[in-house]
Image (cartoon, rainbow, N blue to C red):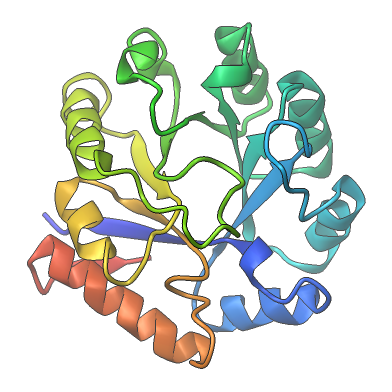
Length: 236
């Protein structure tokens, strides 16, 4: 069976004062999804895009919006994203008192739902919710610290991916295993080989400075195929 790996470009790594052009370029490359971080400045020391900006982005593109909420007040941001009209919402387990409530809130709106885990959060927190969700996002660096170039991918990244892939295969094979944080051209083969099938692409892959997006995308696809070890891999 043909294996599929989803490419999810992180829009915060594009030119933030030329967002419309950036989105058009990605769309012209054949990419259909934007990974959008919604950060409150408290959960993580960053705040790249405001709600009004995301609302305006929704008006000028039909690309799928894959929202990653990094906030302490999940319910507020979930409701705001549902109002804007997005295709997928992922929230962090660490800041959720009522995980199941948030899952149902998103599902009932007909939107795909994901749960994100910080690097050191145990996979056991997914035991009861894995059958209910569409995606798990594993953070491979501490969220929001990507601008610190010394922040390296955690050493147990591939082990955690393998462990989660085994869990997904057993409980709910339809769940996508997304990885986020220093998903670089060097690390993509190992991440894909370990079982990741949805890659959040940023400054160390699709948005490497000095190359065109087309050149970087070709390098990403090459790294994915290397990880899959097969020619009939389908990169989305």
